[in-house]
Image (cartoon, rainbow, N blue to C red):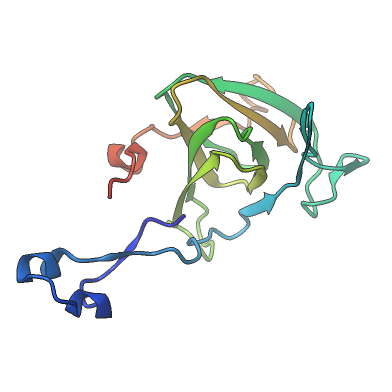
Length: 192
C-alpha cells in the first residue's frame, strides 16, 4: 500500500470540521505504487490443505524463469535478518536479484534507481514483503536495494540471481551504499 497522502484541498476537507483539523487533513493514497523501470512484482499462488501449504516460486526451463522473461537463474541463496536489523544497500552492475520473503515474515524493502539516464533515475520504491502474501520481486542491475525486518522474529529471504557470486575483487559484482543513503527516516514505520 502506498503511504502518500493527498493535500488538504481534498473535497472531504470541506466537511464540518474545525479550521485546525482542516489545515492538517489528508487522505491516504490507496492507488498504484510509483514504479521503477524494470522492477517486477509477481503474485504467486499458495496451495493449502489440511497438512500445510506449498508455494511455487518459479518454473525453470534450462535456468530460464517462466514468470520473469529474460531472467536466467544461476544461483539460489538464503538469507536471515534479525528483528529490527537493517541490511542496506546492495548495488550490482550486472546482477538481477529475484527476492521471495515467506508470508509468515515481514520485511520492508526499499529500492532506489541509481541508473544514470534511466527513465526512473532517482525514483524510490518502498513496500512490505511477506506479511501474509506470496510474491516475488525482480530487482534489476543498478537499482540499490535494502531491507529492514519489521517482525519480532528472524526474517528470511530466498533469492535467485543471474550472476554467480565471486569474492574476487575483480569479478565481484556486489557493491554497497551506506544504510542511510536515502536518509535514516526511510526505515521508520509510517505512522498514521
